Length: 413
Image (cartoon, rainbow, N blue to C red; front, top):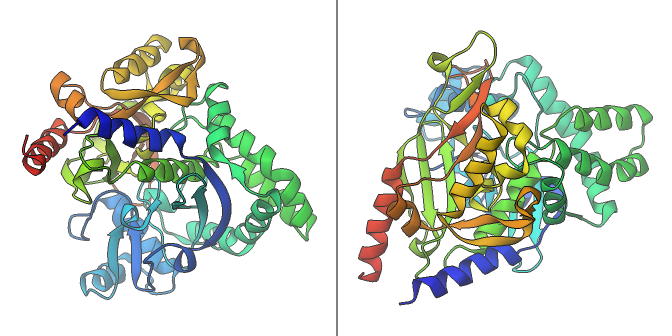
């Protein structure tokens, strides 16, 4: 068996994938396998009993949004009764930031990989502050969710269709040259996203007031593009999954309790261990004692070769996650050591436009004792408080070691 040949095939698929934002649809209508009694969540599989505060809060908020419960006690009872099922977004070609909870009635972005034909999905970004993805679910949160669903989503759907589709891969490539890394820093990407959509929003919206509100919501949200970027990275990573004999990691995800990975040549098996608490900068009044363990599907960005792997393209990010600009350069250089190849479309100006490190190689991670670097937000451990900081985190080495043992057993190495 030629592992390098398999890894070449897997990473070529990942890099060649062309992710286009083609529309918006109701989760129930467009996400494969979505059901009326199903909630999707970030990370590997989780139960209510093992869920963190932010995850429980987001589940509660989604069930309130669906009109099924009115408080957390009712949500707990409904989930534990089996009437509501919980499954990972990743099991349904989807991803979601932080808790990542997506319910049947929510609208989601639809990304199509035009090269390989697969699709991926992600919910809409709520912005900053008290939001569902951090476990908040009060009336303020519900009002915003209803406005997004009833007002913003229909207009965005028409605007995306009017545009003929937005090339998220090309957008990412440009954003990397404008100081973003595609995970925690999306200021340039969100501006490019707004630039692409604004003429079409103005064209299809029937009300100047609605146009103004939607443009303001997108313009004021530096994370507006994160969700379609995540879905684009999911489409890229999925294209690389299922290659026999490949040691390339195609999923990294956290649910606030566990950090999990999946490997191209090992099918749908998850390898999990307890998620770590990120190290970074906290908002005034908060510290390590307030932080929830790492959470969210946004590590799909690092999986596809951006985020923490492209930190050298975004030196300003260190003002948000702590450190100095040299630390950003060092981070990307370290990630080359555990990656199989370099990206052709995602390049780093500071490195003379060298491609970002791409294709986390299970063998190299274990051999070098170096785990991937991840840029992330930090959620409060209690539901409803929201983001309390941002920083850096690494997956537990144990999951890579366990996966490598499973790989050796499967392929008789």
